Amino acid sequence: MLLPSNPKANYLAHKEEIDAAIDRVLDSGWFILGKEVESFEVEFANYIGAKHAVGAASGTDALELALRACDVGPGDEVITVSHTAVATVAAIDLCGAAPVLVDILPESFTLDPALLEGAITPRTKAILPVHLYGHPAAMDDVADIAAKHGLRVIEDCAQSHGAKWKGKTTGTWGDIGAFSFYPTKNLGALGDGGAVVTDDAELAERCRLVREYGWKERYVSAIAGMNTRLDEVQAAILRVKLKHLDVENELRKSLAGIYDEKLPATELGLPIPPADGEHVYHQYVVRSAARNELRQYLKENEIGSLIHYPVPVHRQPAYADLRCASSMAQTEKAVQEILSLPIYPELSEEAVRGVAEAVVGFFGDR
Ligand SMILES: Cc1ncc(COP(=O)(O)O)c(C=O)c1O
Image 1: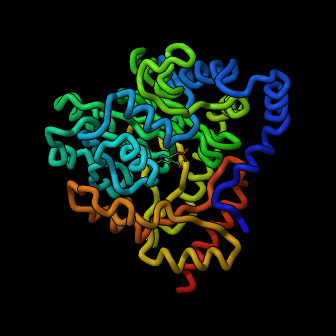
Image 2 (image 1 turned 30 degrees about the vertical axis):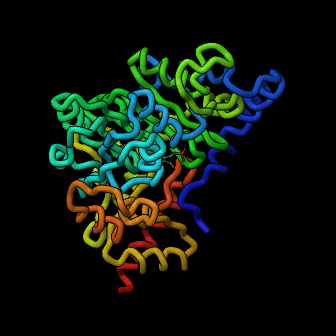
């Protein structure tokens, strides 16, 4: 079965370097928050083009750190989308704040900025756009509205390592950007990991404090905190993989180009890259009214695919009482139609052509 993503293939592509990095950490005898984490933070901040990066234990934690550093808590509202990984909303909830959900733009699957002003209340503290699938959200509009209303912007960059909107890398538009290094991400650890990036030294310092019990000095909590430390083994692995990220994003883009060319655009909605930005194809998501049948057909042809995400947050039992500040028509339509086709840097061009042929065959047979 052709897998929709394949973190093992990425490990094998860099096995020698990664194994050496792991050995280095094991030999050092230092396993949590050490030299590897410090070096990774500098290298990742440089890559993103931010002044500071702070490692965390996961992307969800990175979002929570970012929110808490921005002083988001009980009584506050944070506007985000329903069409996202549930982690986005879980992080807001974990801070004690109220997530407020708005609909997406159908062409980019990202937050529709035109809906923001209708969602803002005196309690609104922040806007949390998600750069879903590797497609950047419309950050200039989000940033303008946030500035007008004095709101914080926290970017969910879990799927957008290296993506750009109008020349600026995702994670550098808002006050803070939060990244996940879950193994399947464009930059993936071999376990859990995450990081925040920011240009604001004060926010970075607050993230460092909150990350480890609010400690300014060991065993003394200056502020209330949590434990969300990045470990040395993951940081060492991420340092190896970061060096290859640009090349691997280019490989994703060229595989997406083959899909763009070979897939039957008359039958499918194909991803629309931003006119003035860079999509990094964390996922290659097509749309079809016959999505379920197509998925089944691909499965019968040994091709794996996934739905990101089948149940929007406002339809999840745990979050059914959240306030939706707009119609969710585009979200509801998208979840019926979307399908993520296999894409990862080690996937061969031939395999991508094979997937495209199977899709063409599905529509030809109907
Ligand atoms: C959009 C989005 N936000 C947040 C997260 C949370 O990241 P993690 O799984 O590392 O906690 C993920 C990844 O699962 C994600 O895709």
